[in-house]
Amino acid sequence: MTIAKSRGYRVFQGINAVILTGVVIVTLYPFVNIIARSFSEERYIITGQINLIPRGFNLTTYRIVVSDPMFWTNYGNTVVYTVVATAVAMLLTTCYAYVLSKKDLKGRTFLIWVAVFTMIFSGGLIPQYVLVNSLGLTNSIWAIVLPNAISVFNLLVMKAFFEGLPGELEEAAAIDGLSTYGILWRVVLPLSKAVIATMVLFYAVSFWNSWFTAFLYLNETELFPVTIYLRNLIAGATGAESAGAGLSEVTQAASNIQSVTIMLTVLPILAVYPFVQRYFVSGVMLGAVKG
Image 1: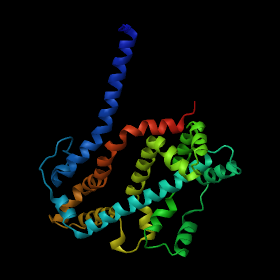
Image 2 (image 1 turned 90 degrees about the vertical axis):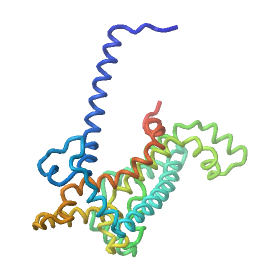
Image 3 (image 1 turned 135 degrees about the horizontal axis):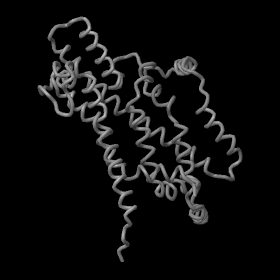
């Protein structure tokens, strides 16, 4: 049986459609503009003639960047850093969140406040640098991975998700002889695909876009992530343009290099996002709302 929609409901749907369409347009416009600028010539960008369509189509900046072997070295570093850091972060966050989800755990409140305390207070940049340096982590992948291994926000979301799972399932698994780790691996994690996919996306995006940690602790060019490479490229191109480098390729690159670097940085994340998008909303909401 079809339920007739009232006039007020149809008006409500129409208004919602208009508002959401406007939000989509406002969201997509800057990104489309960046794509157009990345493929446009310098003179059109300088004079502000680029809107949604490239003008004076050119690939000069892309050619300069991708022809540099160091770009691919740093890009590979970023992939390694992101994969390793995300794996470590997910391991620590999952274990910590699972422990905190047990309401009968002794010292649970203290462990929660230890995590929450770090959201409000931090040791500061200089003490952290001294600590990392004294541990001998500089110029290594662990200088990027360990200082940011646990996001307290992600921890609390995953904790809330685990608390929402039926306790009877774990009790039945324990009766069947599974250990604590067996219950986590064979019962809890298969039921937590939504929140796990969401947390993987959060961590991967964070580590992929991170540059300041690498800027602090990495001194060798061969160890830089691609974000540092692109930052240096922007600084070098901008400096050459300010110094009046004529019509060289560097000056050409300086006009649209920011757009090109944004494109090269976000493309891998855009490629991964569709595979986890279906888990995204349910993962966040199920981990954030208790009913």
